[in-house]
Image 1 (tube, rainbow, N blue to C red):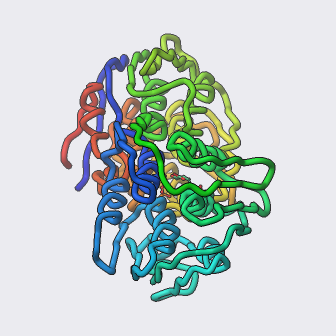
Image 2: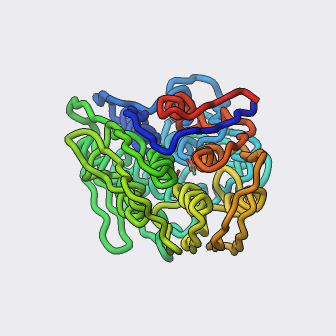
Length: 407
Ligand SMILES: O=C(O)C1=C[C@@H](OP(=O)(O)O)[C@@H](O)[C@H](O)C1
Ligand SMILES: C=C(OP(=O)(O)O)C(=O)O
């Protein structure tokens, strides 16, 4: 389904409650399933969290996690320690192109029994759950932090805990720290020093309720809206200044676009009151890859040049995000150069009209391009792709007086 998105006012005002972080939710669901006694509040209503919940309660051999990277990686480790259970873990066509080999190799070195159903190194995989006796593992840390989080999440269920030695330059580090903090808040001891992660064994947790903070990657689209509007005041809950989510760096990054973030007890207010359009910005997004598309489109809409680096993980996400960004920015008239790990956008004076943005089965392509509607009406193809992380996205746009029409 295509949506035409437009907006006819200069000022954007409103209040929204964005759903819980899918990253925090999916970690807590695994911890709850392994150790019990956790209540989770403000759980994400995203597809990725729905498929995780379903997988953890399913008794079927085949478990299909669709497009959810965290579910694929975390469940590979989880099912490896489910003694006596055999599972075939599969996903969407794209998931079958997203590599899993480093995690499978790491788990096999710990004694896990995993085989490939189709292509070596990629889902679907068949897992014969066993009691794993290993207490240490090494793996390459520069491809996806999700492999590392997956091992951390099962670490405490092993009889001697788990020491994880990280090799090479670590990528998406805040997600590893988030996993550690979620484990600690649940009552599991652990540490991350230099390149070594240690997770202590644990057999039982005492009962507690853990709240999920709302999703900062989803908040990025409202930072972009605030930056592209002439004036804006947008209140978002539930957010905290001391966030576990690396994408909370948005508050600092968007200052360059004149967007100030006021932190209240349980919410943030994004305010833009004066025209602020930097000539150019440069950002290293190694620690926050999911906001690359948002920032690139903000810059395109403002005519700001940008250089984004640290983007080496983007090609193995929901789509090759660097290629997808280049294609769609060029449709709007932008000039962009990409390499394996960076993107450079030239400042552009005008935007092309009547453009339909292709979304490549990637929620973030739809949500990153929608805010450009403040400058020019835009058509978003396969618009409901947003449900992967943020099913209420278009309703929330409407609350902010965007006009969303089925095309
Ligand atoms: O652990 C997580 O919850 C995530 C880690 C990141 O992936 P990589 O570690 O593969 O960069 C991020 O892109 C993804 O959206 C969520
Ligand atoms: C990369 C993402 O998700 P995942 O890897 O969990 O599919 C994302 O949400 O941008």
